[in-house]
Length: 330
Ligand code: G3H
Ligand code: 13P
Ligand code: ZN
Image 1 (cartoon, helix red, strand yellow):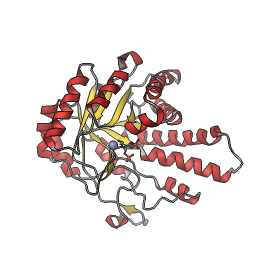
Image 2 (image 1 turned 60 degrees about the vertical axis):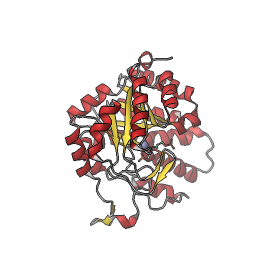
Image 3 (image 1 turned 30 degrees about the vertical axis):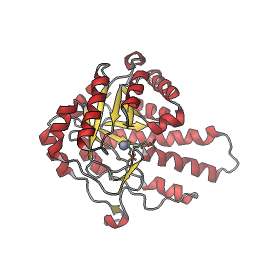
Image 4 (image 1 turned 90 degrees about the vertical axis):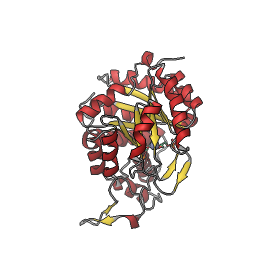
């Protein structure tokens, strides 16, 4: 058993208390490799932002769980070396079983998500409660989820959103004891969050998707005032990356994300954690495609992964400064 406290990591409790009071959201960035981790740490140190490093079960399979744990420990030391001891949490994204959550807690994770959102309500409550009882013994914080996001979530795909029912939230947080709650108000995972026919065009001809269901968020906030809310599926799918990818041989079609002003608004509410993965994938892919196309003789991975890391860093800094409002809050 390794305690996250010995690795220099923190859980999300104090992060969320401060985010709630200060009306901003903590960035939760997924990582699978060294360049992503370095870019996240560089960006959050440079903007002085707290950060949640997220690891999915897919990331654990890809990179090896032990390596990821040491990389998170490395992230803490790297931040100090860069000159700022920012708060860093290591969080399991979309944990689907008690055993996976337990294993992460034993490896030094400071926070876990147990995603029982696809289960019948009572089963979601029971599974989430079991994880909370285990995690809290070690002061590890737990995120639960109510409502289902459209798209592919946790290897289960849903064609339509099942929005979170505000009438269920008091019962769920009371019975489970979770520290934060992920909700469904119109976001979804991946780079194709809306079909073009669901969108309108603004004066500049840019597609504008339907707004998030802030009415549902407000109802939830009324039921559980001051309780930390999490938004998954919150990439904005910047069109500059989509254009570069497609210009250099990619084939991304109808890639549409959540407009940044919607996320900015959410960050000032009870939403304390905003999950972003796809935008990082797009930035990295755009950089690699452009470099390999414009410099076809290049074969040193450092020459394309290095710039990809720089593009990622700029993206993450922009999120902290202009979207989540977490810059300067470390
Ligand atoms: O919510 C899903 C995250 O973007 C992680 O994706 O399971 O492909 O690592 P992944
Ligand atoms: P995106 O696919 O919108 O980046 O969402 C990521 C996420 O919710 C990770 O849990
Ligand atoms: Zn998610």
